[in-house]
Length: 211
Image (cartoon, rainbow, N blue to C red; front, side):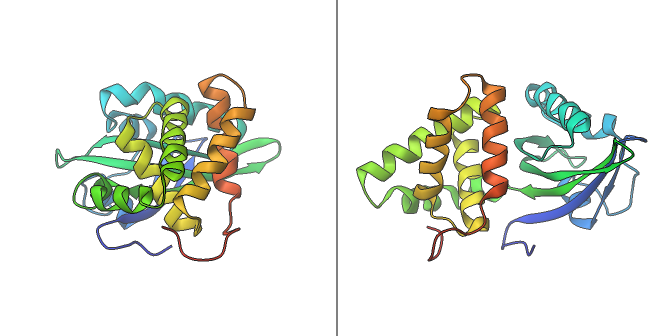
């Protein structure tokens, strides 16, 4: 996966037995570190999280370690360089051996640029089509806020990133999330599981470019 200008994307493997992480160079940079400068373990990974997000991230990682299920998680990261970044952690699933989950694999996305210079541009483009589009996008943002414990800006950045990288228009992706919200469980954990499955299953079902 190629990173867009201003966006860093890097892969990881999480060894569940040793609780250590294998990061590529971009993930080190997302954490404000020189590539290869440390061997990250789970304690270090969690300590990098914003204090208000740490418990939520730990709970999702613990569940994925037990089930091997894919997930998407947006949170604030405090790097070793003291820079706060907005990060999307995407787990594609686990590797199982002898009925035991051995590792999780996926990638980090640095969404910081989406929250600064580009945020207003993205928002304007996403809601320009009609009042109906604006309404469904706002509903989808609300559902993401509930499911993942995000604020409004984090929710929109997550929605926009998935739209861009699955070639699905923002309003179409929003409509599918809202539909899943309305038919899903009433708990935030139930919604998150449904959204994780939906986001990972989408594979460019619409023609045209994402907006």
